[in-house]
Image 1 (cartoon, rainbow, N blue to C red):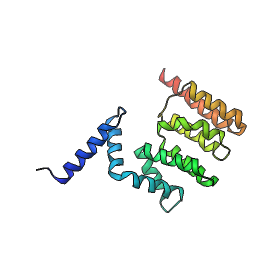
Image 2 (tube, rainbow, N blue to C red):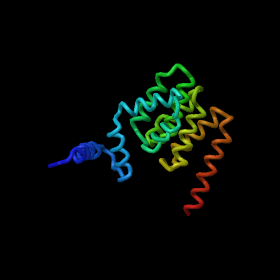
Image 3 (spheres, helix red, strand yellow):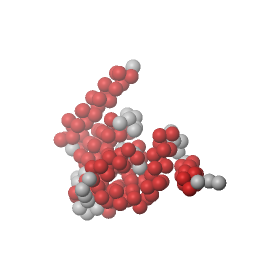
Image 4 (cartoon, rainbow, N blue to C red):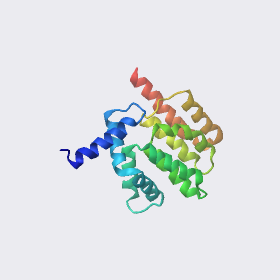
Length: 172
């Protein structure tokens, strides 16, 4: 006879296996935890962070560990709907902290947005620093865009290019 926990883990395993991307065991475990927590919990946590509620930093670090694609998507939807610059910046900040590789697709939009350009560059920085994405012609174009559009970002872009160059040297 199966115990309740056996049934729960079987359900989660089925959900994880249905995910279309090839996942490492760590990523599968994170996805399993995310499934246990549920979409409602993820959304409420993102809202909690954006509201800067007590212990919001613990909440954002929890999402960072999960690397939740759902949380990144939800934060992006908040950014898109936001008319409040602070909420828009906080939503992009959540995306930066989660550092899901998918967010590379939104960075151009962020850099072109006066409200969040610097935080948008921070998303790219985080993805590259944490090695969630590799340096590529696409990332170079985004760095170029940041310096062309915002001269005050040139120092940050130089820093990013510097650590990428150092990483190449070390890897040789």
